[in-house]
Length: 244
Image (cartoon, rainbow, N blue to C red; front, side, top):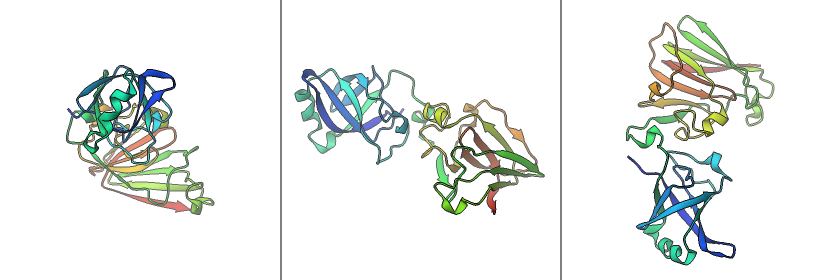
């Protein structure tokens, strides 16, 4: 099983309290919690508290280089901890969480995500998803995002067609649920609110919601995170169109 890890960016004093330290971590692969046991250069450090400032930006399997640091309160004196982070090979910390880790820490066969919506996306506030079956083609109609992609300011609707569709399902996973870890890809997908093709073992069994069967036989796995729901599709191919 892979351990969560992060990089030590700084070790600070807690005001006038010389008995405790703040360990600043970035490049996190998991959010530390109070009671977790950090392991730094052979030392075991119990987390006494965690700053929640940027928790919703943390990931649980991959790290993003642009994340800010998370502060972790440690009941150790700063002067005892600072030497542990002086050398390049001691910048990294791993830990043993008190709670059970997500499934993707327990396998080396992780799925990969390819973002498909280059230059367009669903509306962030009112995607208005509607679905239509035509033979073995599933058509998803949504409102486009005119704020990030200005070329869609006068486009009322875009459609994404899934050709040779085998099955699909709409789950109630929204952005809040994704950041809270309610999706099996929470933190594993690069970011919320995008349209991906997933390759590899996608662990469909971890989501109990039923699929709607269709007449196709495509096996490619498509996953579209929208404002209030997530569209998951198995099909052979996809095509995006828009009307002006």
